[in-house]
Length: 328
Image (cartoon, rainbow, N blue to C red; front, side):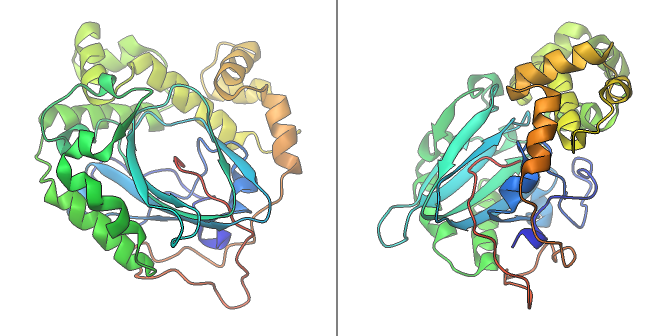
């Protein structure tokens, strides 16, 4: 039900703040409203003890008459992705850990399927690893579940994807992640806090400013981000600015010069260059395409973020559906 999708409203809560609802924007999703008009996409919060490291779970079910290509400009974070692409009695459930993607991610959706994912906060994944590893090793890569978590990861896809009740899927993922016994890590907390500041504070425009605010040398900041986020502070700053521009490129009437100034670009051409490099099309072309996309049905109101099940509202039809395996 697109009416319960995270497609409008405020941005994310702070790292580990125990917020009572997942974010409801489409940052990073290319032509987000068009995708959500076709998919049954929901976000759910993890169990309370996990929220310091995990921003949200995302759940998708689809039943497509025509194939659909979904695209995402990835966030600077790791995702745990469990999926079944096809009928439950015909195809196996699979899973992987997706490191930070540096380019636009595309996937073709067809027939029926189901995905359950966990989006870790930037800097929040490393405490779940059996042994410390630099997150830079994961950037641009996909890891098998047993490579990331050991033998326990092999049975995870079936345990999470098999239940029909949404609450049971969420509970199964909670149980697995809690079983990994993530431990408090001051460096992870610092990385998460700095990445969150970049995401939410538009005055953070240069890496040296972030380093000074954190009381770190430039080199120490670079090492922290490599080890715990997987990408550089500069890349993180640029990516979040592009996400904001995508979110606000809502139609052909967008004032690009004003938007460039608000996001801290030196001028409109600077915004156009960075946006085009990250998304693959110019801002104006993106806005025109967004205006032509179908819209999801009007939302009946936010879902209970920890409700046990997900069912259609009376009179609120299920969209024609399609899902994406690394939605933000």
